[in-house]
Image (cartoon, rainbow, N blue to C red):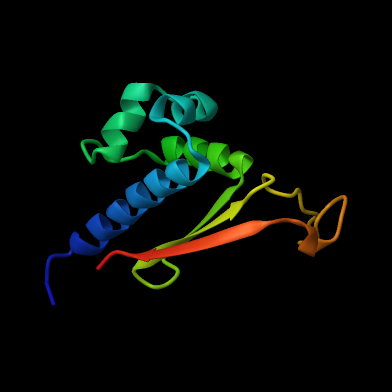
Length: 119
């Protein structure tokens, strides 16, 4: 096991970048399309996905919001060391504070799950 204290951070950054790329691919979006939906520059997204820039929290928040609006939910570090994408084919169903779907039963949405572990 490495004693480099920056290793967990690098691993998390790689997981985040990988999950963004996987989510974008699952939605069939191009980099310019995700950048536009997230309200960030195409250059910023391309540099982030290429690992040439560390993502800022504000950028990740915008990307996450765009992906969720498109129907993808990302669970980071689940399973440990990886991430899980849940893709809702009809977009995310709005939920009330108690977690129940608004406008229909919880089971009415279609979903696909994919997990990836970076080790």
